[in-house]
Length: 91
Length: 314
Image: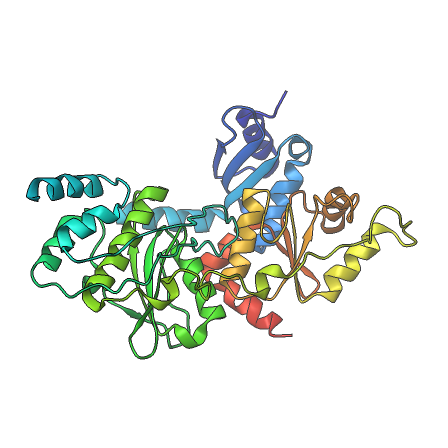
Protein backbone atom coordinates (compact mmCIF):
# COMPACT_ATOMS: atom_id res chain seq x y z
CA UNK A 1 0.00 0.00 0.00
CA UNK A 2 1.40 3.32 -1.04
CA UNK A 3 1.61 6.43 1.02
CA UNK A 4 -1.46 8.66 1.00
CA UNK A 5 -1.68 12.41 0.75
CA UNK A 6 -3.36 12.38 4.15
CA UNK A 7 -0.55 10.48 5.83
CA UNK A 8 2.05 12.87 4.43
CA UNK A 9 -0.03 15.80 5.64
CA UNK A 10 -0.54 14.25 9.06
CA UNK A 11 3.16 13.57 9.55
CA UNK A 12 4.23 17.04 8.46
CA UNK A 13 1.54 18.71 10.58
CA UNK A 14 2.53 16.72 13.63
CA UNK A 15 6.28 17.18 13.29
CA UNK A 16 6.61 20.69 11.88
CA UNK A 17 3.43 22.52 12.94
CA UNK A 18 3.17 24.34 9.62
CA UNK A 19 1.22 27.57 9.30
CA UNK A 20 0.60 26.62 5.69
CA UNK A 21 0.69 23.19 4.13
CA UNK A 22 -0.31 21.89 0.75
CA UNK A 23 0.36 18.35 -0.38
CA UNK A 24 -0.50 17.41 -3.93
CA UNK A 25 -0.53 13.81 -5.07
CA UNK A 26 1.04 13.94 -8.52
CA UNK A 27 1.22 10.19 -8.95
CA UNK A 28 -2.29 9.77 -10.24
CA UNK A 29 -3.36 7.80 -7.19
CA UNK A 30 -0.66 5.21 -6.59
CA UNK A 31 0.92 7.26 -3.82
CA UNK A 32 4.42 7.36 -5.22
CA UNK A 33 4.81 11.01 -6.06
CA UNK A 34 3.99 14.18 -4.16
CA UNK A 35 4.44 17.92 -4.42
CA UNK A 36 4.73 19.75 -1.12
CA UNK A 37 4.35 23.41 -0.28
CA UNK A 38 4.99 24.24 3.32
CA UNK A 39 5.51 27.22 5.61
CA UNK A 40 6.65 26.65 9.16
CA UNK A 41 8.49 28.37 11.96
CA UNK A 42 10.92 25.45 11.93
CA UNK A 43 12.53 27.00 8.83
CA UNK A 44 13.49 30.29 10.43
CA UNK A 45 17.20 30.90 10.10
CA UNK A 46 17.73 27.90 7.82
CA UNK A 47 19.03 27.83 4.29
CA UNK A 48 16.99 26.15 1.57
CA UNK A 49 19.06 22.98 1.73
CA UNK A 50 18.54 22.71 5.48
CA UNK A 51 14.82 23.34 5.09
CA UNK A 52 14.53 20.54 2.61
CA UNK A 53 16.46 18.33 5.00
CA UNK A 54 13.98 19.13 7.75
CA UNK A 55 11.10 18.00 5.54
CA UNK A 56 12.97 14.93 4.32
CA UNK A 57 13.84 13.93 7.87
CA UNK A 58 10.25 14.37 9.01
CA UNK A 59 9.14 12.07 6.20
CA UNK A 60 11.87 9.44 6.61
CA UNK A 61 9.37 6.61 6.93
CA UNK A 62 7.14 7.76 4.10
CA UNK A 63 10.00 8.45 1.71
CA UNK A 64 10.94 4.79 1.72
CA UNK A 65 7.75 4.15 -0.25
CA UNK A 66 7.67 7.34 -2.27
CA UNK A 67 9.35 7.59 -5.63
CA UNK A 68 9.38 11.34 -5.94
CA UNK A 69 8.92 14.05 -3.36
CA UNK A 70 9.10 17.53 -4.78
CA UNK A 71 9.31 20.35 -2.26
CA UNK A 72 7.93 23.25 -4.26
CA UNK A 73 7.99 25.82 -1.51
CA UNK A 74 9.68 25.79 1.85
CA UNK A 75 9.04 29.12 3.53
CA UNK A 76 9.01 30.65 6.95
CA UNK A 77 5.61 31.93 8.12
CA UNK A 78 6.77 35.50 7.46
CA UNK A 79 7.87 34.69 3.92
CA UNK A 80 4.59 32.96 3.30
CA UNK A 81 2.59 35.97 4.53
CA UNK A 82 4.70 38.21 2.35
CA UNK A 83 4.23 36.09 -0.72
CA UNK A 84 0.57 35.69 -0.01
CA UNK A 85 0.11 39.44 0.30
CA UNK A 86 1.88 39.93 -3.02
CA UNK A 87 -0.26 37.46 -4.92
CA UNK A 88 -3.43 38.82 -3.35
CA UNK A 89 -2.44 42.34 -4.29
CA UNK A 90 -1.72 41.26 -7.82
CA UNK A 91 -5.05 39.46 -8.19
CA UNK B 1 -5.42 25.55 -63.80
CA UNK B 2 -6.67 28.01 -61.25
CA UNK B 3 -8.89 25.37 -59.74
CA UNK B 4 -6.11 22.86 -59.49
CA UNK B 5 -3.86 25.36 -57.79
CA UNK B 6 -6.54 26.33 -55.32
CA UNK B 7 -7.04 22.72 -54.39
CA UNK B 8 -3.35 22.33 -53.68
CA UNK B 9 -3.28 25.39 -51.49
CA UNK B 10 -6.03 24.00 -49.39
CA UNK B 11 -3.98 20.91 -48.85
CA UNK B 12 -1.02 22.98 -47.78
CA UNK B 13 -3.02 25.13 -45.41
CA UNK B 14 -4.53 22.10 -43.81
CA UNK B 15 -1.08 20.89 -43.00
CA UNK B 16 -0.98 18.36 -45.77
CA UNK B 17 2.24 17.12 -47.26
CA UNK B 18 4.29 19.74 -48.97
CA UNK B 19 4.00 18.84 -52.58
CA UNK B 20 6.42 20.11 -55.12
CA UNK B 21 3.57 20.17 -57.52
CA UNK B 22 1.81 23.06 -55.82
CA UNK B 23 4.89 25.15 -56.16
CA UNK B 24 5.30 24.48 -59.79
CA UNK B 25 1.66 25.16 -60.44
CA UNK B 26 1.73 28.48 -58.69
CA UNK B 27 5.11 29.60 -59.79
CA UNK B 28 5.03 28.42 -63.33
CA UNK B 29 8.68 27.83 -64.05
CA UNK B 30 9.58 27.15 -60.44
CA UNK B 31 11.14 23.83 -59.79
CA UNK B 32 11.72 23.67 -56.11
CA UNK B 33 11.46 20.45 -54.28
CA UNK B 34 10.95 20.67 -50.57
CA UNK B 35 11.98 17.83 -48.50
CA UNK B 36 11.95 18.24 -44.82
CA UNK B 37 13.66 15.07 -43.87
CA UNK B 38 15.04 13.69 -40.68
CA UNK B 39 12.72 15.40 -38.25
CA UNK B 40 13.84 13.73 -35.08
CA UNK B 41 12.11 14.34 -31.80
CA UNK B 42 14.16 11.89 -29.85
CA UNK B 43 16.51 14.25 -28.04
CA UNK B 44 15.83 14.35 -24.35
CA UNK B 45 18.91 16.31 -23.55
CA UNK B 46 18.90 20.06 -23.52
CA UNK B 47 19.95 20.60 -27.07
CA UNK B 48 16.78 19.59 -28.70
CA UNK B 49 17.18 21.53 -31.89
CA UNK B 50 15.34 19.31 -34.24
CA UNK B 51 17.36 18.13 -37.09
CA UNK B 52 15.92 19.41 -40.24
CA UNK B 53 17.30 19.87 -43.64
CA UNK B 54 15.94 21.33 -46.78
CA UNK B 55 16.39 19.23 -49.82
CA UNK B 56 17.95 20.63 -52.91
CA UNK B 57 19.52 24.03 -53.23
CA UNK B 58 16.68 25.81 -54.85
CA UNK B 59 17.51 28.23 -57.59
CA UNK B 60 14.14 29.84 -57.64
CA UNK B 61 13.25 32.18 -60.43
CA UNK B 62 12.26 35.69 -59.47
CA UNK B 63 8.58 36.16 -59.68
CA UNK B 64 6.56 39.29 -59.52
CA UNK B 65 3.20 39.53 -57.81
CA UNK B 66 2.67 35.86 -57.41
CA UNK B 67 5.22 35.67 -54.63
CA UNK B 68 3.13 37.83 -52.35
CA UNK B 69 0.07 35.82 -53.04
CA UNK B 70 2.02 32.70 -52.33
CA UNK B 71 3.20 33.95 -48.96
CA UNK B 72 -0.27 35.12 -47.98
CA UNK B 73 -1.88 31.88 -48.86
CA UNK B 74 0.69 29.83 -46.99
CA UNK B 75 0.50 31.79 -43.79
CA UNK B 76 -0.94 29.65 -41.04
CA UNK B 77 -2.44 31.56 -38.15
CA UNK B 78 -0.30 31.85 -35.03
CA UNK B 79 3.14 32.30 -36.50
CA UNK B 80 4.36 35.79 -37.20
CA UNK B 81 6.19 36.34 -40.44
CA UNK B 82 9.96 36.22 -40.21
CA UNK B 83 10.23 39.75 -41.56
CA UNK B 84 7.91 41.08 -38.87
CA UNK B 85 9.68 39.62 -35.86
CA UNK B 86 12.27 41.81 -34.14
CA UNK B 87 15.75 40.41 -33.89
CA UNK B 88 17.32 40.22 -30.44
CA UNK B 89 21.01 40.99 -30.14
CA UNK B 90 23.12 38.15 -28.80
CA UNK B 91 26.50 39.83 -28.85
CA UNK B 92 26.56 41.23 -25.31
CA UNK B 93 26.96 39.20 -22.15
CA UNK B 94 24.75 36.40 -23.41
CA UNK B 95 22.47 36.60 -20.42
CA UNK B 96 19.41 37.32 -22.55
CA UNK B 97 16.31 35.51 -21.47
CA UNK B 98 14.58 33.47 -24.13
CA UNK B 99 11.34 31.60 -23.64
CA UNK B 100 11.80 28.10 -22.26
CA UNK B 101 8.95 27.14 -24.56
CA UNK B 102 8.54 25.42 -27.90
CA UNK B 103 8.95 27.49 -31.00
CA UNK B 104 10.81 28.44 -34.14
CA UNK B 105 13.96 30.57 -34.16
CA UNK B 106 16.19 32.17 -36.78
CA UNK B 107 19.84 32.92 -36.15
CA UNK B 108 21.68 35.76 -37.91
CA UNK B 109 25.42 36.40 -38.15
CA UNK B 110 27.26 39.70 -37.62
CA UNK B 111 26.49 40.85 -41.16
CA UNK B 112 22.82 40.32 -40.48
CA UNK B 113 22.66 37.32 -42.79
CA UNK B 114 20.33 34.53 -41.83
CA UNK B 115 22.36 31.44 -41.02
CA UNK B 116 19.92 28.90 -39.69
CA UNK B 117 16.26 28.38 -38.94
CA UNK B 118 15.55 25.82 -36.26
CA UNK B 119 12.70 24.54 -34.16
CA UNK B 120 12.90 23.39 -30.62
CA UNK B 121 10.82 22.14 -27.73
CA UNK B 122 12.73 24.56 -25.56
CA UNK B 123 13.96 27.56 -27.50
CA UNK B 124 16.11 28.92 -24.67
CA UNK B 125 18.18 25.74 -24.46
CA UNK B 126 18.71 25.50 -28.19
CA UNK B 127 19.87 29.09 -28.54
CA UNK B 128 22.14 28.62 -25.57
CA UNK B 129 23.86 25.62 -27.09
CA UNK B 130 24.17 27.26 -30.52
CA UNK B 131 25.83 30.21 -28.80
CA UNK B 132 28.29 27.91 -27.10
CA UNK B 133 29.01 25.85 -30.18
CA UNK B 134 29.04 28.53 -32.86
CA UNK B 135 29.64 31.93 -31.24
CA UNK B 136 31.10 33.33 -34.47
CA UNK B 137 27.86 32.69 -36.35
CA UNK B 138 25.41 33.87 -33.69
CA UNK B 139 24.93 37.63 -33.58
CA UNK B 140 21.18 37.99 -33.27
CA UNK B 141 18.11 35.83 -33.18
CA UNK B 142 14.40 35.98 -33.92
CA UNK B 143 12.05 33.82 -31.92
CA UNK B 144 8.41 32.92 -32.35
CA UNK B 145 6.84 30.76 -29.67
CA UNK B 146 4.47 28.15 -31.07
CA UNK B 147 1.65 27.43 -28.66
CA UNK B 148 0.36 24.22 -30.12
CA UNK B 149 3.73 22.58 -29.93
CA UNK B 150 3.03 19.30 -31.61
CA UNK B 151 5.48 18.17 -34.22
CA UNK B 152 3.25 19.24 -37.09
CA UNK B 153 2.75 22.78 -35.80
CA UNK B 154 6.46 23.25 -35.18
CA UNK B 155 7.45 21.88 -38.56
CA UNK B 156 4.82 24.07 -40.21
CA UNK B 157 6.16 27.16 -38.47
CA UNK B 158 9.67 26.25 -39.53
CA UNK B 159 8.55 25.77 -43.12
CA UNK B 160 6.87 29.14 -43.19
CA UNK B 161 10.00 30.93 -42.09
CA UNK B 162 12.34 29.10 -44.43
CA UNK B 163 9.82 29.54 -47.21
CA UNK B 164 9.57 33.26 -46.55
CA UNK B 165 13.34 33.58 -46.64
CA UNK B 166 13.54 31.69 -49.92
CA UNK B 167 10.82 33.92 -51.34
CA UNK B 168 12.78 37.03 -50.47
CA UNK B 169 16.34 36.01 -51.19
CA UNK B 170 16.06 33.07 -53.55
CA UNK B 171 18.26 30.88 -51.40
CA UNK B 172 18.00 28.51 -48.48
CA UNK B 173 19.64 29.58 -45.19
CA UNK B 174 23.14 28.05 -45.31
CA UNK B 175 22.65 26.07 -42.12
CA UNK B 176 19.48 24.50 -43.51
CA UNK B 177 20.96 23.28 -46.78
CA UNK B 178 20.75 19.53 -46.90
CA UNK B 179 23.95 17.87 -45.81
CA UNK B 180 25.07 20.86 -43.76
CA UNK B 181 25.40 19.65 -40.19
CA UNK B 182 27.01 22.79 -38.76
CA UNK B 183 24.02 23.50 -36.56
CA UNK B 184 22.71 20.05 -35.91
CA UNK B 185 25.91 18.13 -35.14
CA UNK B 186 26.48 17.65 -31.47
CA UNK B 187 29.68 19.03 -30.11
CA UNK B 188 32.10 17.30 -27.78
CA UNK B 189 30.30 18.61 -24.71
CA UNK B 190 27.46 16.22 -25.26
CA UNK B 191 29.80 13.34 -25.88
CA UNK B 192 31.67 13.69 -22.60
CA UNK B 193 31.25 10.26 -21.03
CA UNK B 194 29.80 9.62 -17.61
CA UNK B 195 32.18 8.94 -14.75
CA UNK B 196 32.38 5.33 -13.65
CA UNK B 197 33.27 4.47 -10.11
CA UNK B 198 34.63 1.02 -10.94
CA UNK B 199 35.88 -0.64 -14.12
CA UNK B 200 33.26 -3.35 -13.76
CA UNK B 201 32.01 -6.19 -11.56
CA UNK B 202 35.15 -8.29 -12.11
CA UNK B 203 37.12 -5.95 -9.87
CA UNK B 204 36.92 -6.35 -6.11
CA UNK B 205 36.85 -3.03 -4.32
CA UNK B 206 39.66 -2.54 -1.85
CA UNK B 207 38.17 0.63 -0.41
CA UNK B 208 34.57 1.23 0.60
CA UNK B 209 32.19 2.63 -2.00
CA UNK B 210 31.58 5.69 0.14
CA UNK B 211 35.24 6.61 -0.22
CA UNK B 212 35.00 6.34 -3.97
CA UNK B 213 32.02 8.67 -3.87
CA UNK B 214 33.94 11.05 -1.68
CA UNK B 215 36.86 11.09 -4.11
CA UNK B 216 34.55 11.89 -7.01
CA UNK B 217 32.75 14.62 -5.09
CA UNK B 218 35.96 16.22 -3.86
CA UNK B 219 37.77 15.73 -7.15
CA UNK B 220 35.23 17.37 -9.47
CA UNK B 221 34.34 21.04 -9.52
CA UNK B 222 30.77 20.20 -10.43
CA UNK B 223 29.33 16.70 -10.41
CA UNK B 224 25.76 15.49 -10.81
CA UNK B 225 24.62 12.05 -9.68
CA UNK B 226 21.62 11.30 -11.85
CA UNK B 227 19.40 8.48 -13.06
CA UNK B 228 20.46 7.82 -16.63
CA UNK B 229 23.10 9.45 -18.74
CA UNK B 230 23.92 12.94 -19.87
CA UNK B 231 22.17 12.49 -23.18
CA UNK B 232 19.42 10.20 -21.95
CA UNK B 233 18.33 10.95 -18.41
CA UNK B 234 15.79 8.42 -17.21
CA UNK B 235 13.90 10.56 -14.76
CA UNK B 236 12.21 13.94 -15.08
CA UNK B 237 14.05 15.37 -12.10
CA UNK B 238 17.43 14.28 -13.42
CA UNK B 239 16.54 15.84 -16.75
CA UNK B 240 15.65 19.10 -15.04
CA UNK B 241 18.97 19.19 -13.24
CA UNK B 242 20.99 18.48 -16.40
CA UNK B 243 19.04 21.13 -18.30
CA UNK B 244 19.77 23.71 -15.61
CA UNK B 245 23.48 22.81 -15.62
CA UNK B 246 23.61 23.06 -19.41
CA UNK B 247 21.76 26.35 -19.57
CA UNK B 248 24.07 27.90 -17.02
CA UNK B 249 27.17 26.80 -18.82
CA UNK B 250 28.47 24.59 -16.05
CA UNK B 251 31.35 22.28 -16.90
CA UNK B 252 30.21 19.22 -15.02
CA UNK B 253 30.69 15.51 -14.64
CA UNK B 254 27.84 13.03 -14.56
CA UNK B 255 27.58 9.79 -12.63
CA UNK B 256 24.76 7.43 -13.56
CA UNK B 257 23.42 5.80 -10.41
CA UNK B 258 21.45 3.30 -12.48
CA UNK B 259 24.63 1.91 -14.06
CA UNK B 260 24.87 -1.16 -11.83
CA UNK B 261 27.66 -2.57 -13.94
CA UNK B 262 30.13 0.19 -13.16
CA UNK B 263 28.54 1.75 -10.10
CA UNK B 264 27.11 -1.15 -8.10
CA UNK B 265 25.19 -0.08 -5.02
CA UNK B 266 25.64 3.59 -5.76
CA UNK B 267 21.95 4.35 -5.87
CA UNK B 268 21.59 3.67 -2.16
CA UNK B 269 25.13 4.63 -1.13
CA UNK B 270 24.84 8.16 -2.48
CA UNK B 271 21.75 8.73 -0.33
CA UNK B 272 23.69 7.60 2.73
CA UNK B 273 26.64 9.74 1.77
CA UNK B 274 24.67 12.99 1.56
CA UNK B 275 21.93 12.05 4.01
CA UNK B 276 19.57 13.12 1.25
CA UNK B 277 16.82 10.73 0.24
CA UNK B 278 16.44 11.55 -3.42
CA UNK B 279 18.33 11.55 -6.70
CA UNK B 280 19.50 13.65 -8.59
CA UNK B 281 22.15 15.22 -6.38
CA UNK B 282 24.45 18.02 -7.42
CA UNK B 283 27.77 18.79 -5.75
CA UNK B 284 29.88 21.88 -6.35
CA UNK B 285 33.43 22.04 -5.06
CA UNK B 286 32.91 19.08 -2.80
CA UNK B 287 29.75 20.41 -1.23
CA UNK B 288 26.26 19.08 -1.64
CA UNK B 289 24.10 21.74 -3.26
CA UNK B 290 20.76 19.98 -3.66
CA UNK B 291 18.41 18.23 -6.00
CA UNK B 292 16.07 19.42 -8.71
CA UNK B 293 13.85 21.55 -6.45
CA UNK B 294 16.74 23.44 -4.93
CA UNK B 295 18.37 24.06 -8.28
CA UNK B 296 15.05 25.29 -9.64
CA UNK B 297 14.79 27.61 -6.70
CA UNK B 298 18.32 28.90 -7.30
CA UNK B 299 17.50 29.60 -10.93
CA UNK B 300 14.49 31.64 -9.88
CA UNK B 301 16.44 33.59 -7.29
CA UNK B 302 19.41 34.10 -9.61
CA UNK B 303 21.66 32.41 -7.08
CA UNK B 304 22.63 29.83 -9.68
CA UNK B 305 24.89 32.29 -11.52
CA UNK B 306 27.11 32.91 -8.54
CA UNK B 307 27.22 29.19 -7.83
CA UNK B 308 28.92 28.43 -11.12
CA UNK B 309 30.98 31.59 -11.10
CA UNK B 310 32.32 30.33 -7.84
CA UNK B 311 33.09 27.01 -9.46
CA UNK B 312 34.76 28.93 -12.25
CA UNK B 313 36.56 27.54 -15.25
CA UNK B 314 38.87 24.70 -14.51
